[in-house]
Amino acid sequence: MRGLVRAYIARLKWDMKTIILYAIGLILSLTVVPIIVVNIAPSSVHFVSRQQYEQFLEIVKRILGSEQEVPLEVFGSVLGVLNIAFMGAIAPSAISTITLGQLIYRDKVEGVFEVLLSGPISKRDLILALLTYTLLTALVVQVLVIGLLLSLSTTTIAVLWLYLSVRLYFIKLVLALVPSVTVLSSLLTAMFSLPIAVEPRRNPLLVLPALAVVMIYIAYLFNPAVDPLQLALYIAIACVVCSTILIALMPRVIREEWLIR
Amino acid sequence: MLYLHGVFAGYGDRVVLRGIELGVGKGLAVVLGPNGAGKTTLLRVCCGVLKPFKGSVTVNGVDIYASPHVKSLVSYLPHNPGLLEDVTALNNLLFYARIYGLSEAEAVKRVRELAELLEAEDLLEKKVKVLSRGQKKRIALIRALMHNPQVLLLDEPTDGLDPLIARKVREFVKSVSKELCIAYTSHNMYEASEIAESVIAIDRGEVVFRGTVDELKNMLGEIVIGFEVRGPREKVEEVFKSLGYEPQYKDFIWIVRVRSEDEVSTIVSELVKNGIKVLRVKEAETSLELFLERLRGRK
Image (cartoon, rainbow over all chains, first blue to last red; front, side):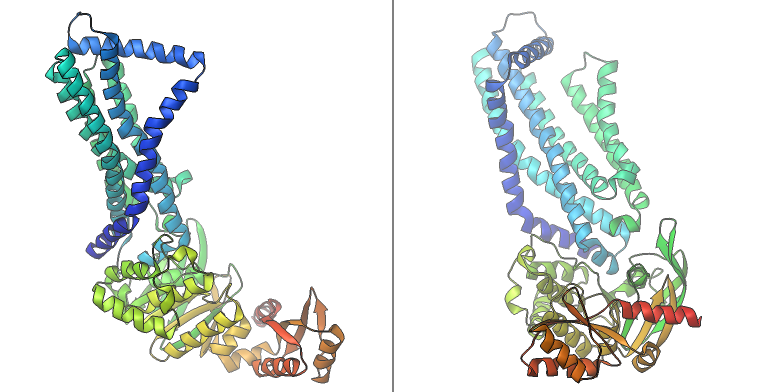
């Protein structure tokens, strides 16, 4: 088992160049593409965006806990900070899930798992090594993307602080939310990738990561005025619960024949 | 060395192997069978990839499913080479070496030795995705032999390779067969009679024949060989007829019935001597089918 994990960690080093390129692509898609979309979007999109923007304004007002009039552009910046943090964590997670899923699927088709299983390792060892590999890969991508976006956010907050003496709450919020969302969405990425790659049509495990998302929505439904910090906590709990169930179930549910072509 | 006791195996509800009783010792045994007969499933069961529904597989008397560490003694080369596409051949081999607990220095030394034997030294630094099928097979063979196994299981290792590379692979496998217990699957009777020390024929998940190459040849009677050649049609026909054959010309291939592989060499020499270029010599599928038909009839 140790040898297999070492082998997969070595593989991560070989894949690093691809991972960095992939992270750069994500950063570009998260920054450049939205700007282009906003500029060429039809008026209906602008209308919907405006509505969402106003809803977010309400949330930010509630966070500030005051009815004081704050310039719109300041709210816009705060919103931007939060949005970037969420987008930075969730969008790469979704994309890396697909990419890692494809990578694992290609290994399966090329007979890599067949060769590994013919060695002195069990199916459980292989699944745990794959989970370690996908989790580490997802984390590297997330850290790269989030690192850049976080530095942008921090700069924005620093400017806001100077400009409006915004409460320390925002800094706490971003600092709490971003790392937790980063780590947890990486966890979800890893959890999703393996079931997607291995017999997606017959794999009941696919339902479980989706539960994490559902749980967050349920939390929001029960308490629409949920504090974002609390929401971060709900996300954390949902991800940990689902991931634990998945890790426990995966070696049992995934059959040998799913790992071979 | 390798024993299968009453093995039933398959995928989901589908039973592929039905009560296989088999023992393979040192030397090269060719497992013959048409597509879908259960050859690949048999190898998967033997190397610990696919747990049988019923029965056991032992290596040196130890059940490989009860004691997975015994799998270190077995090496398996699947139909697909099992290599990571975006990684260099050497790094691929180091990836697998870690699983068998080989140190990097030890692995590199062994890889270089085997690469020299397989004329693959210049492939080691190349990424797998740029290698041809034959080159990948050679790297996969290095991978399979790197940790000095006692049992080597090869799933159609020459399938899809050009004749020259296929011959090299066969010669290499034969050269290492004195030290190892090798099971080599094929659906090519000609290939089997060329390299095998013993032959196991599988049909519909059951062992239908077990014997030596001579016994196989006696059972076989004739082998149907296809010759792909370049030269005037009349001239080719004349050469075949001068050797006493009645050739048939179908889809640009000359079909001839021979009794042994020695006759194939004679025909090739004669064609070449007459200025005809021999592009490909391949056993026609019908030989195996005929053989199995005879076995079924006898049964």
